[in-house]
Length: 270
Image (tube, rainbow, N blue to C red; front, top):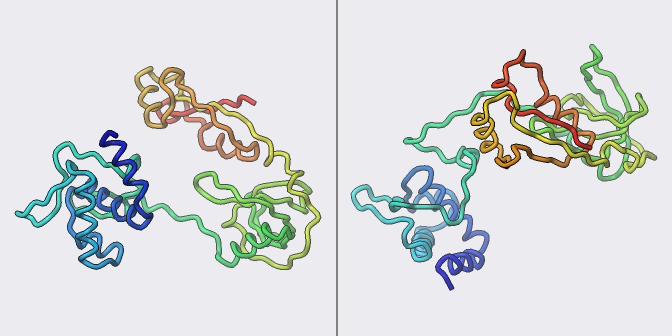
């Protein structure tokens, strides 16, 4: 059995709690370039003896990954270090792991949230198949209005959460932004069948591709960024028909002929 297979077998035998600590060791090595026992002790609330055992177990399993540097009293990655139990692909997983040597910041954008009381009522209504009276602020009306909804599912467009519901005011299935539900009122049993929401249950295929107006090398760079195959420069996605509007609103925009500002385009297949 090769070392790679042996390592894989050992990782599978680790308990979930042990694996989490081993992953934290690698995150520190990868991100900070150093770690000490206190990193495990503070993060997981374990005692120094257990931390020492974890360090020893990691070094025995992956002998070429880290070593102790007495001059700084820290463990550091060895030359050629490659993570074995984490697979970094985005900086998001390191947001909670500050590093003096690797500055990081995010844009202070407003966070879209819904009131906890609204969430509780809406989740219960979906689970129990009930219709609920809500005061909703739509973008087509200047003032919020009360209406009856029969919700049956939730969906996210990557930026905000919607509840999919039958609107008894308009007599059709629609999406409602949870954050715009200002308050809830009475509830009662619903006779609406979620199976009748055809747009929710219909799957459509769309093609996402780098903007053809860009140079070939630019399109390849975008394809790499979004994990789009280089041989076709196209990626086929399967989504609910009801979510197609949000995909189009995100990628199908008018940038006055500037292809660099519209790097991806979307085409509907079926």
